[in-house]
Image (cartoon, rainbow, N blue to C red; front, side):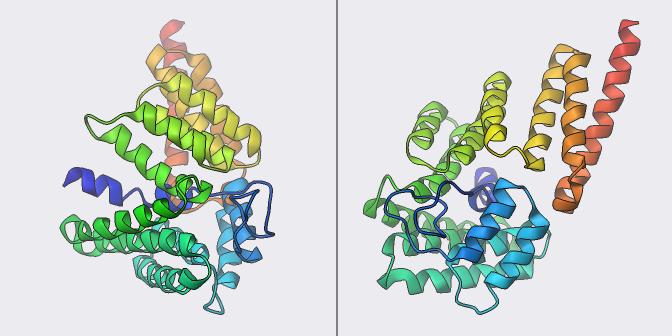
Length: 298
């Protein structure tokens, strides 16, 4: 039950962590070859949310994208995810249903993405049920999630969009469940998922959860190099440096963590409250820890 709960509350990782690379179709953020039709407003929201880390701008763009009720299912999935992190669970349910409806309409034109976002839509419904009814009621949705992800995989096992979403879920399971193989999950994720900077970010998070902090920092630096304006990545690096500083009782690492917390803080108007609260807490804690270590050594 605890593991099912962990899977379901990972909605922001499973759905939100999507982004962009060089375009094939004007709006396809995943594929250079054989692009799929994804509308330009959804593409713009990707850019704002995941490349620039601008939640505020992305929310405004998504509001325009879903206004006519006929957007790409990914736009509704992103809207549901933003609602989730803002605690607006009724809109999570609303946008989850719209994800399912628009994914169903894709069956005749794009069966791969239809199956993929039917799986995502049921996952979103599960996250809503988790919050409103509890994990016992939500667990039933997992069977439908895996059913549609497997159907998508049967159609195109190497598709980068599928492997990005499925890969984040597999990484979550691999680092949390006993008798699993995190390294195999990481290797498959790196081989088939795209875009690269989100793959690097996912690998960094996996190594963080495995407490391999040097490897985590290595991959996070790669993600930052590709998304140098994203304040959320600065915050993540600050967290990792703070962990290293506390491990080694090293004020240099802690001081460096403060510089990254400050970088993130400079763009706080882009971030949701759910990130600002822990950012402020971690920055203050690191400030206090630097002071304590310096006093201890003096």
